[in-house]
Amino acid sequence: MGIFGRKNTTVETATAPAAVNPDLAALTGEYTIDPAHSTLGFVARHAMVTNVKGKFLDFSGSLQLDGSDPAKSTASIDVKMESIDTGSADRDGHLKSADFFKADEFPTMTFRSTKAEALGGDDYRITGDLEILGVTKPLTIDLEFNGSAKDPFGNERIGFEGKAEILRSEWGLTWNAALETGGVLVSDKIKLNFDISAIKNA
Image (tube, rainbow, N blue to C red; front, side, top):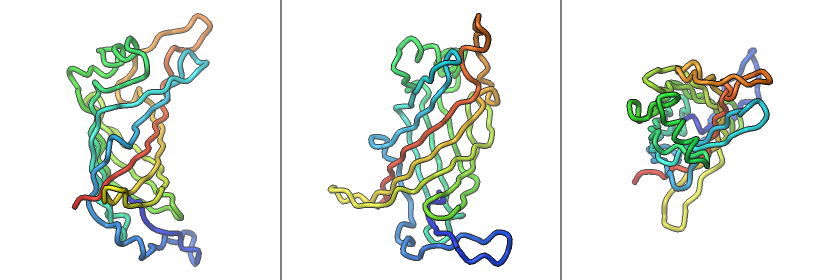
């Protein structure tokens, strides 16, 4: 997932490619996302005045990381829509209903990467296809690599944080309600946030 590389400070053309740190080649390999130590979250504006935060509790994913050539890295994530959690059972039920995610008909949201880029330093960008309600649209995620470590159980871990923004209407999520004071109940723009820990496969 494009989580390696360092910026080349020598600029001879308008844009210089990011150089790769050879010490990171050892991180090359296949990884499994650890959901117990990861968060897939989102933020929506409610009634034009406050933010409602939520997350998904049931998801799985894999990463193929290339420390020598970040552009060859890939990511795949599957999210169970029934696992949505905003801290309110009534609101979660509404989000799973036909007004929003139609969780019975479309039980899974998926992301499949199509491009990875090293931006310099610990910053990276991954682009891929996000499918919701059977609709597939491109999504670009900005990432910050948080490092690697071996945990007390001998697992080799990597970690990173990510963020992105989408317009939910582009995936057919159009339900809303007008406010008497003007505006709508739920924002079209949704902020996505990720905090990922992944374990290297043996």
